[in-house]
Image (cartoon, rainbow, N blue to C red; front, side, top):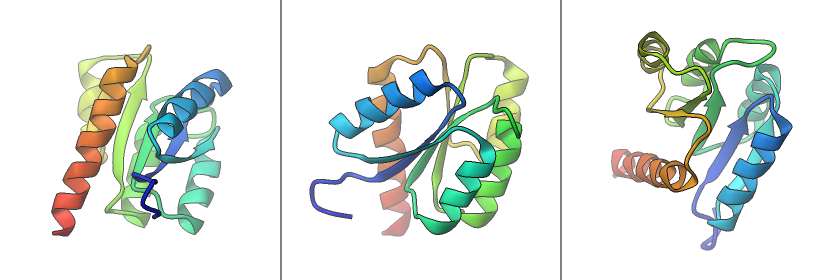
Length: 130
């Protein structure tokens, strides 16, 4: 990671517009950002690249987001995972946390809240390494 890069993030969402907006917002804050439009792409990319954090849509075309969380937890346990959903609910939140989510945000996501959450999660990751 370079000095200007604050962390590597993968944005996983089947909505092209959401991926682009989130990637642009994160890149403007000096994060290195990669994107995936489905679970298969996300798993392939996370097997060949290291990401500090994943932003995961709960509903993907090929896999349920909570199943993807479980898979990523096995392959990259130190990666922080933040769930994004347009379908909020207590059961969704409980399932996401039980499957390895570190945070849960509701769409449409407030960019300030998203950036705060990302920074908090990366800080927790750094503290765990110390």
